[in-house]
Length: 175
Image (tube, rainbow, N blue to C red; front, side, top):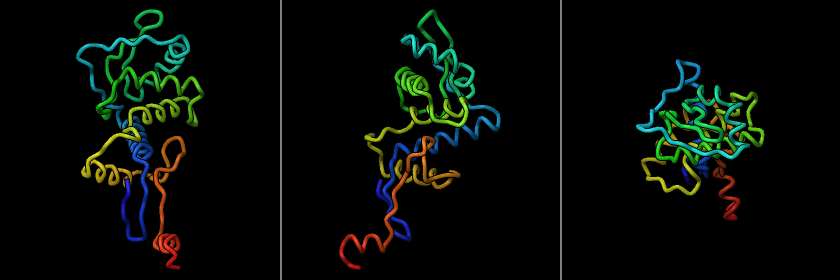
């Protein structure tokens, strides 16, 4: 997303920006009264490879805390009964695999719960190549501005690059 500000332009990574927004929403809901969940009409059964199933068993309580309702349904299958209500237009099974794979690689947080929250936020966010309408872009920027740390996603990657008026003038050999 390219956005103009009073002191130059901003190049916004829509995935990293949405990840920051989702991460802070999850943390805010956890601190308040618990993350709102969206129950599935029918449970989604997901077969997990042994490594992912082991991570699921280790992370079951943390996944519940960040809004997932998942239970073991055999030796390598889990049943997704609910997902965080803030998650929209995603394939829960695909995103669960991505979350568990990231956690199997060690996660990125200061605690296991934080790692689960960061991974859940990342893998339920807008994708980098996902087309957004102008209204969606504006809403994302507005939500990012309301976060406590708008400059980085939960993993620490930058959400935006800033080019000041002076930087732009230098690039066009005006200074």
